[in-house]
Image (cartoon, rainbow over all chains, first blue to last red; front, side, top):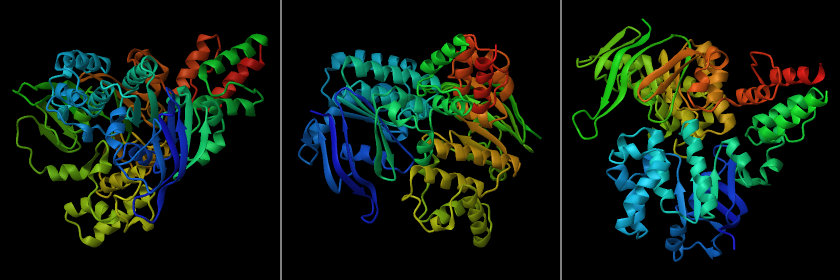
Length: 275
Length: 285
């Protein structure tokens, strides 16, 4: 059974123009799937449809094989954790500690266990020193770390990240990516990440590309990310490695492993040695 | 007068349990007519620093010089409006601050605050919208019905319409798609080169720092670690490796290749030059 299965989904905000057009895709159990596309392509709308913040017009959304409906939504939301791009809309607690506790309370975690969990996750996201601070006074990036800790502490079966790390510094982004990867492995968590980060896409198992409300590509990162002209047409950008490979090709040096920096560097070394 | 910070401290929520020193004795001079990037880990004080530039935050101690103004701690600072006409500040996620019924009205709101006529405000708004690449078909649409990237452009147009000399942007490209981010950065370069605006950009994107900015300020824990020309920062000295921030892609590749024995040209400015330099190595010897 697939954690997320979307079939022929349609949605419009104003009943005239569909922003999600006949979208179908599957997110496999335990996979790290990335969803990419230009701004306004419908990615975030899909995330909101999956957790029932928006109501679909046509099609179906199956979570662990169960159709999302008014009856099923409560149970389904227990399985899914979502982190949005802007942390300002996600705070409830008066302190960072209270805020992380809020989700755990809703999941009926024993109060005796709660402190340990909160401290663990605050440490993982680098916010231990701030447990007694007010969330509203934190910087944008710190707020986002707290929001991420709050969601991850509940260990959802399915984690949806809607550009959750776009406000973090490169190091912070790496910390969070590592933590997510670790949970992904340890708990076999299924991840659907909406992102503009090409590096993250290259490391995912599967990538889905949206363009003007439709799914236009669906495959492994190496399949999807290798064609620079096509990515530009889709208002995206190719990884630096692919761009470099194309320039090398023009100079008569063909490289095979164009989507991966390490592979490409090794390949170039071989060429250097064989000279 | 330039833009300068002299021994500036800023304390959030003083004399409460939440007291926190966000800026620590900052000394900093920003070059006019340049694009300066401000980088550093989350919570290092970047946003706090830039919010001092139009006196949105006032220093707890120290002095800030902005153009012909002086902002001193613990003094009544009069006529901040004239300062805010000269220094435009675009917040993180400015699109959440759009509120008017139509895009044109939203962009006119800024100029109207500075006592111009409706017609003048409209002219300024139209010019600003053209700068951010939104054509007249957008004027009468609701700012809430457009995509996130377009909203960001409307919000930036709202500040451009005031025609400030100094433009301060707090993570203007966060969440934009790669091409949207690129055209946004190109817009800032254009505003700098053609309209001679002084531009400060808080960013986490090291590729943007390398490709579009003149100077870079690195912050950590409320202090300035270093302030240098971008080229010196990336190509000379060790500071860039010390600050534990991810290198731009281009430098990652050149470093990885050099580590494996490639002798590459010193200053590689773009992907074409890198490819040429690699070819030289592989073809000769």
